Image 1: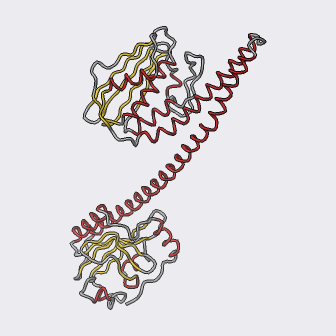
Image 2 (image 1 turned 135 degrees about the vertical axis):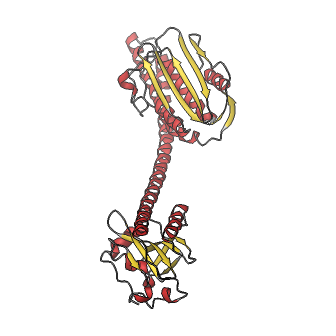
Image 3 (image 1 turned 180 degrees about the vertical axis):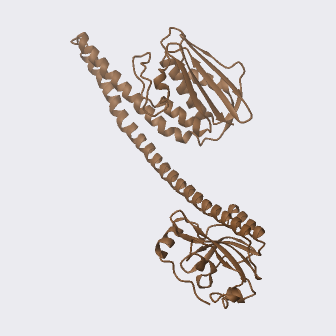
Length: 400
């Protein structure tokens, strides 16, 4: 028996192998299907996906074999990776000086014939093999070798997909941590800024009251600017906080409720005035979903329909329908509309249509971004259509 030599790039090869984070992982059906198919195609007793580590070969998948690993010094696969560009074919190991007295060949005649296709990654490192083994002499046909190579390619693809999935999971975990940090930051900022703003408003009122006999109209206007700016900043801070806290809404448990009852709650909350007519859906659809998240979506959309409306009589119409998978909602108003060149980015954070609301203020570009995030977290989609001076329609879906 001849022990396998080390590949010239062994240190880098091992580093690449371990970066896959696949050694000693659980068996997976996708890999087991490949070894079962390889054994069937080649007519062998055993098929393995073998990864050659520093001092062992470990089997990510095994068909027809009980052990999970064997020492590297007895490994046929460790010989196969020395020439990554071609398969290692051993019709009868008893006649090959490298293996004739190998314990795997002698003990119970486990490995008499062997055919291994090196598993070579995109950087050229041979990580192991897809191999088929039999306890009697055997030669594979060209067709069988061709199929075995095709299966080996699929193993490499699975390795790469698994790595990408793990990388994505790590990125998602990191983003989750950053979002948590941003939410905490938003809470702190909200508290630390809102109190001084409230003090500014209160102090301005007190000063204006004390100085009312000596203030001229221009001075009174300046006091008004101070309070208006403070309220605008307070609203902005509240919207930022709501945007980052909306993440927690999607984890609320689904509940059953009537849509029209929810809309009534919202209109009461928004203190709808006589100059606003809201047409509810004709039938009160019973919905089973995340009520708090849906409520936040409607508050933002209905609130925008009221604020950005230049008509004496505001009219908002709400429709709904459903299929086996989704609920669908449509909100149409007779407001000032959205310029066509602004529609594409209307859901981007801090992006606005540039419209001035009924109070003369511009939006901060947070509300619709929050709406889109909530809709997508509920496995739905949202879109908008609009005509300047005529209407704006928001349509969105949420998964049942």
